[in-house]
Length: 245
Image 1 (cartoon, one colour):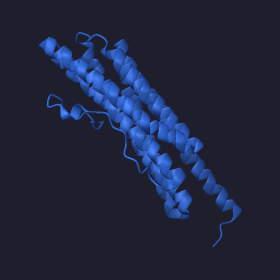
Image 2 (cartoon, rainbow, N blue to C red):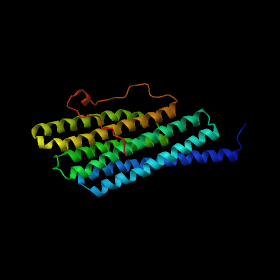
Image 3 (tube, helix red, strand yellow):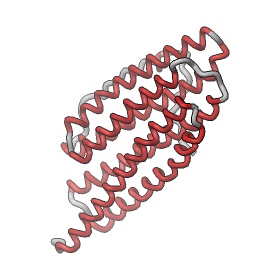
Image 4 (cartoon, rainbow, N blue to C red):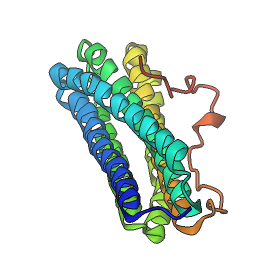
């Protein structure tokens, strides 16, 4: 049975509302990344606490998006194109929520690191790495809004740059730890932060892949370009993709 114009307009408004929530969520996550990195560099515990507090808003938005998309699927029986959009939105929201959790995990360590001697250059290097991930996220969300497959593919390829930055930071931390055992605890905390940022890049890449799926109807066929070689080093600490509380 064909939908009346009135029902169709309500459906379109529901889709627009969900997409507006995605963009609001994306803006909050972008801010969380940079606030977490800035709190470490400036040793600002209040800013770190704000990141931890704001994560609850990000989590709430994901819940609302999941509820609204589930309701649309149940009530509207969307056609193939709209169903692809709804599924992509759900996955994008999930990736944004994980990035928010990783930002919160970074902020949690700021209070601990403030009590320790600063590792020269580390906070600024982590901020630069976080800035690159934030720019990738901005472009991934722009690609989603504009349905720009080329921009989404560019984001995917830039994840290798984040991996290279992570590798360089990891080597620096190893050097500091070997030169002075008193640096080990601080460097371990800083390594977890670096690994969290590297994992954020992976989640941004997943968002870009959803954009490609949304535009083309098919997931990317090529393998992700990965440049993180630290997993081959036995001195590496366990993976830091920690779930937020």
